[in-house]
Length: 409
Image 1 (cartoon, rainbow, N blue to C red):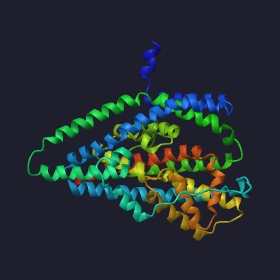
Image 2 (image 1 turned 180 degrees about the horizontal axis):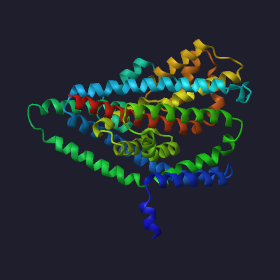
Image 3 (image 1 turned 90 degrees about the horizontal axis):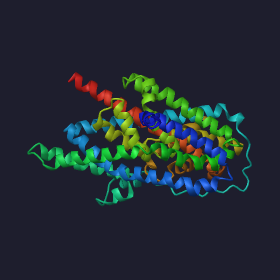
Image 4 (image 1 turned 135 degrees about the vertical axis):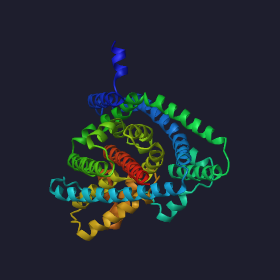
């Protein structure tokens, strides 16, 4: 009977129970048990994350191709792409403004941490033009082997367009094969997602064990301000977006997004959360051909949570060095962080790379990153959650706009 009840639980409740258990066990283990958690619990989380990463590439490739073939209109894909990029840039700019605004108000509460002997080696940032060049694949297999999402999206669009153009003249037998492959990988994803609660527990528990003392230590106030900004942005910006432009109640939206939100918080991986995000968005009523394009693109270039992190950390680091940020400096941060969200697309540890770019743009010492580097994973959990929620909001909004456009026609 108990087994039946467990099986009847929704994925959101199962993940929530796993999340709570991970926090409790992590705090019980503490720093003394961190090595045990890292050696014997984390590997199972890594196995689960590897399975998710394995399924993401074929899901993105075949779902985008299937979506384009279903739309049978090259202009429609261009229209969806433009709306998506505009939505992402606007919400990123709002996110950095919220981060700077709230952090500036709370500046007096930030702890004064010594900045002497700080050293931080910033990764070399990729130029905007290099990023543009890097979007286009030079090899058919390399994007799939390296899990380069932007290149996989470009591949899928090119092959999808080719099928549409040839399909106007004659029937293509391979179309059914691609649609079948899409169904196979979706079913495979469904099977892997049933392991989500185990994955969440094994990924989060070692993080809590290792960082528990630091969370309630000197950086608690900075983390609190960042999380207040994350919640503000999600509740205000996404609620207004999905309600006014998406035609979905905010309560329904956040309730439907819970499995993806909790998984993103535990794994701190936007790409890893992509399959669950796709499932949640489809259940919320987004068009599959639109969500299959918008979500993979968002997992790579949409960084609202990361933008908030830039704002809060810039104000905190400036305060530690006794520097007051001026209005022109804040505007520079807004512009730099918004453009950098695309400029650092697909770069490992993009949050740190972006922060180094932001600090450099306003003349703040890059060494200041060392102040927050220790608890970057805790920041990352929140910013990933905001990022994937923004992707989902965009999919809902664009789907609704396209539906209305179709009804007018």
